[in-house]
Length: 536
Image (cartoon, rainbow, N blue to C red; front, side):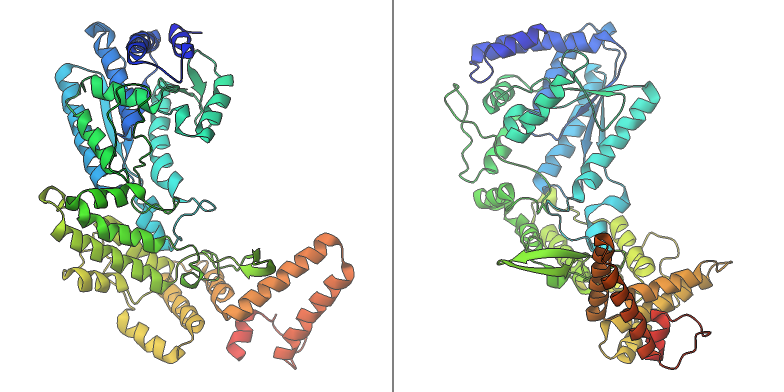
């Protein structure tokens, strides 16, 4: 056990200011020893909240106390910009990164800051508006890996690839939650070196958590009593947390009996994994200069509707109907799993987002007037998905953009504005289909599939693609759900070994097909749902 561990175990829960001063001196020596022990590069992950800011300041001060000839190992400071962060926090992060970069160069510190972003295909709006992913829920938390984990892990893998291994320094604390404490305790058991835990998701990387046993009070005492070494004001961070607390109280900690404001949570303004965005609500409530963020909060609350089945397709995103057992008010039923937002609602979310962006650019303070809620590159990718993957050749995105902003949409993708099919053809197709949404979808897919293959030098795979169009779009919702239930019942009968029921169901299917296509000889071509649809 290291000296720092002995000092922190002495009194973890109620550490006085004097004890904290002594412990920081011991912790500084520990950081210096670990830093100088080998040539393994450090990657320090920061969100620029109170915990990660504390760790970064501790590491900076410890390394700054070393002689210049010992500051040879690079500390990569990484921050992930999800592009849907609270705008106030996002501005703070960018300012902090710039200050850190300038100060590190001026003071000769081996600090190398990197602002990471998800790839365009993984951004929040490309997935929600483009692909139709529903607002995230705990059962389908698709946003976290795409927006946060993947960019950081990709960077860490590159460091490991170049150096063989790395040490990841984090500001996680056991006091954050019971679940976090249990996870950290579990990792402590597997430690291969003092204070360094293995990283289960990233081979050849170890995790170092210097403030794992600190309380909220310890964090705020440190930030308020020790000067920020890269020129940032910790008082601004303190004020930001205070403004994100419902009662606008974040008391200055003078002793261990005084509660601190550590429960404010900053994150994505679109987050529907929590019941309410308390931090943004409090900011708007506590500061009239932040009322310009109200349109963002309105969109977030509109997304956070627990039962949004009417806004979503009855099929999964790849076109199949999947069923689940639903228990509501004591009654059990087999229902289709709703998945992507329908065309109408995807266009609705785009319109709402552009309206909010246009309004906030008029009402926000001068330093926030350039706010971007959705980038041009994201809209270009959304347009591509709608046109090429969903076959919606009415090309509604440029029209919606011009209606909301009054400006013409300039797509950066080469050749994006060239198409044989467009809005006029879509209107004609709607008239032909006479309000039959599935018929319209099928015809649009068939026409656009032919268009896409027409541009290719070889048309290999066109029949399989056309068959897929029929498999996913030729049935009415009622027939598709009925067919999925029959498949489920047949699968259950097979798994239970019920031969009689299997025979009954399969013979019943053959009879139904013969009834539709009565008089067809055995030598005729195999009956498919596509041929049945055309005969009807």
